[in-house]
Amino acid sequence: MTGHEDGYVIRNDTFIYALTSDGSYQKVFGKGIASLLEKTRETGSVNEACRDLGISYSKAMKIIKRAEQMIQVVLLERRKGGSDREGSKLTRDADKLLSLFRELEAENKKVAAANGGKFIDGLEQIRKSQSNNNGREI
Picture (tube, rainbow, N blue to C red):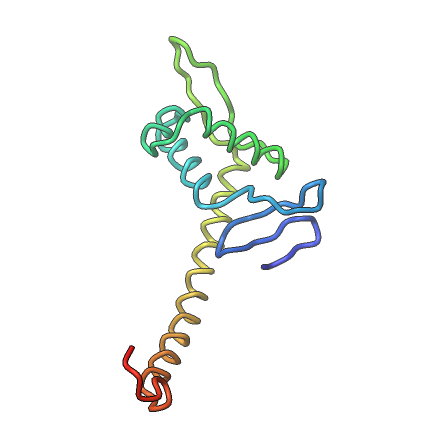
């Protein structure tokens, strides 16, 4: 876990957690909400994004509202629906946050690939060693 003084941590590759009032950490931003926001930007509609991603509109809005409250950043410019169907647009801050998140994700993948390679090499050495199975079949 990577900590930060302002009450946020990064765990499990690229999930961002926020410190809550009860002293626990809760996930507030990750791959799921990033995909939802990107699909909303692409379609211009949370509703369409939900259809494309296979999640309910009410669940998506709960996720977005919760994230906005916990990170204290407005993510969507909500415009009226109805016959005009103006849809939703990401805020500039949401665009910046998505860009930062995707950069973090890319960097974490590089580190994981480098460290994963070391692990695989070590595993192969263990598997090839005579002491590995002590004569037992696996």
